[in-house]
Length: 249
Image 1: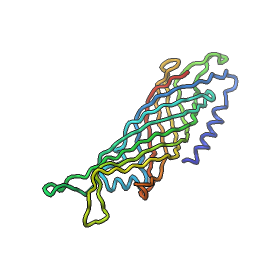
Image 2: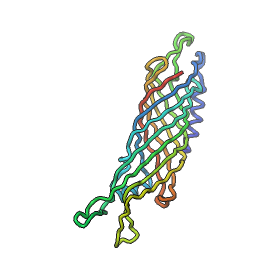
Image 3: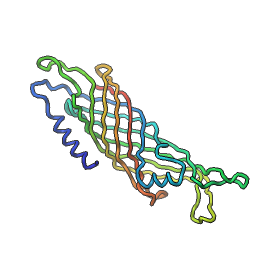
């Protein structure tokens, strides 16, 4: 998929700079965007699979709220460049599967810990507007008007992430004598390359304001070291579904 992004961007350049003959070139503009919605991690790979085998959690438990900001600038009436920053933060409580600990009179107590995932992707993308940002009216295209604006595109960036587990854990080094370790904290952070595709729709509320819907799918993974070394790649990709507002100036 990542190999197809340069092809997508090259195609966008050709389409975006091909202005319709005989029409007045609509003006370009900039916009600030605020969006919020949900992030749904894909959870591929052995890191997540290992967690699901050992603990009572699944990747879907990390479906949670995300929000972000963007700055979008027009290159032509049919081509725009977007700069984005998004924020996601979720904590999931889980326990060991089939392993319990407690006093002699109640030995079947679950062994709990919290798993925390935080991401902050900072990305840039190229957006194709098939119908243009502004339409033209009149026999000579002398009037510019706003209208609903569908768009699609792709981009790249970096995802700054933190993964943390805090609580009680089991030492499996001696299978005949399992030891419960209380109050431990394991944490890892890093920066990973990210690639994404997106599609959206802006509905004008006036000359400057628009209501927007946007969906994007991201591919991103990193290899933890330190406390989580040897557990496989951590998949940080997934689907973002968002709504928001755009202010154009």
